[in-house]
Image (cartoon, rainbow, N blue to C red; front, side, top):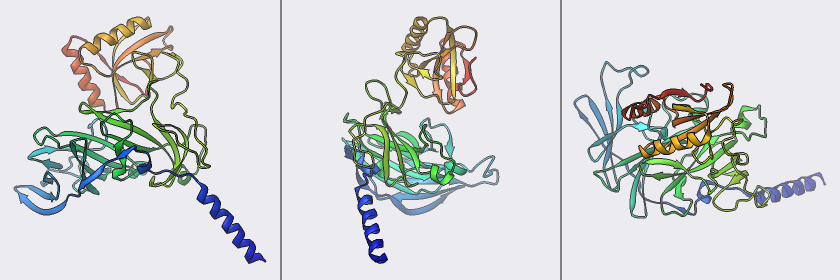
Length: 365
């Protein structure tokens, strides 16, 4: 009798498990990419103080390089490394800003794919000198090799590894990608580290005019999926989402789209967000350049428009209510890298504006 009871319980649990609605990266794209080549190492050679690992099997040959020398140190002065494509040298990166060089000389994977007449080479590698949670990330370097004489490079990181990262998500005819990053939902408190690793946030991006842009809906709210699943993001349940098409929770019920940000309140000084010139919230990174404090929002918006005429694409407003009265700080840039902010500061100097370096994580000026 006990054995029969165990069988019934096991069968019931199995049926429930079968009813779980689970997703994977390859189910999120409306049109996955088609892999056209799998480049592999075919040769190695030494030229002076540089070693080359030559890859073949794709539409363009490339090689990884490593420069030897006693003057180099793994920590303070790493050996120069990178990739040579069609005679042009590129560094490896692991961020969208292409700001932190990765001194790696070994790939986890390399693929080529084509999409709407364009050809891309993708390399995947480990995060150099990673620590704790950063060791979960994989570094993607994407090269648009359609024009072999004008190769464009992009980079991003994700805790998911695989070519299912790429596809067509918003039906605009431009190749997109999605990434996953560790994130416990704001309404949960998880103290167990292993359990926390089961939660992550999935977001979507596109390649636009040589840069990466996060995809958002008409209300400028980012498309996202808050998920729970295995640590490698192979399968997951959807907890909350605002995606390109309807998604279901683990019980099979359609999820009502929920904005990633709270309800839109234009230029709310009580919210520690950046805003674009139209008043939509933008997540803060780390570094920016403070151009000017304005006493009224209309003046701040006019200054943003003026800066845009000088080809400054990333212009923002940060309300400040902590300096005695409300003011509106006009900023250029929203960077993880301090060097990128310094470059923006130099560009402002060229048009006669003496901007001030601004640390977005420290507070208000």
